[in-house]
Amino acid sequence: MAIEPARRKPRLHRGRVLRTERLTPHMIRVVLGGGELAGFGAGEFTDHYVKLLFPQPGVTYPEPFDMERVRAEMPREQWPSMRTYTVRSWDAEAVELVIDFVYHGDEGLAGPWAANVRPGEEIYFSGPGGGYAPRADAGWHLLAGDESALPAIAASLERIPDGAPARVFIEVSGPDEEQELAAPGSAEVVWLHRDGGRVGDLLVEAVQKLEFPGENVHAFVHGEAGFVKALRRYLRVDRGLPLERLSISGYWRMGRDEDGWQSSKREWNRQVEEEEAEALA
Image (cartoon, rainbow, N blue to C red):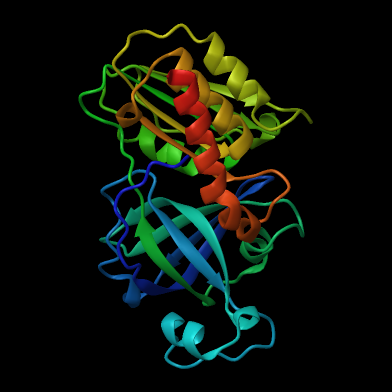
């Protein structure tokens, strides 16, 4: 379902934690820095992402750390666990990389790490990847996503030209999870509160009810795979939008950790594309 640019070999980086901040009850910001991040290279896209590497407990890795050597010499169960996160911002002058983490207590791997990590600790990661930024030639912009897409939506709003209309729908668990966003005056930002409902239901309803202000739209729809699939079908089949006007991807899938989702994502995407082609035939 993702529309991605050509892949290139990811570069390995080592970042040192400079500081952390609790943005909302379920969102934690971690700022990484250190001289080794000079020349990191993010900035072209607003959905840049990195793949964080979390060591397996009790496992000693070669020094200097080399992921290719790890894969060649160590059993699979000893490889670091990998988690994908969006770059919220990158300041090349200050050499600061900002990543926001959704936190649900002890659940998961990256969230608890962000809650407990302390300044001075280090983490390896690869990247950046990415492929979306708001198009300057778009008549208007549509952005829709859940908490996992909020960092990319926030970064994208900062790049939408003044005067370009934007309709933005962000679904979070409740009002305490709303954030202050820098957005052009022409943007209309709507926060949707699940209040215990199923992830994405409110987003699907909101986008389907939206009166499109024009046809020349550039759309960004990311988050849980179930609602992303529903909105992709709506935008492609019902609205007839071409793929080049869409950035759409399931960042995660309900009931799967990242390892399980990534292992099944290609097949999921293939099925989505086949169903879409049949509907468009």
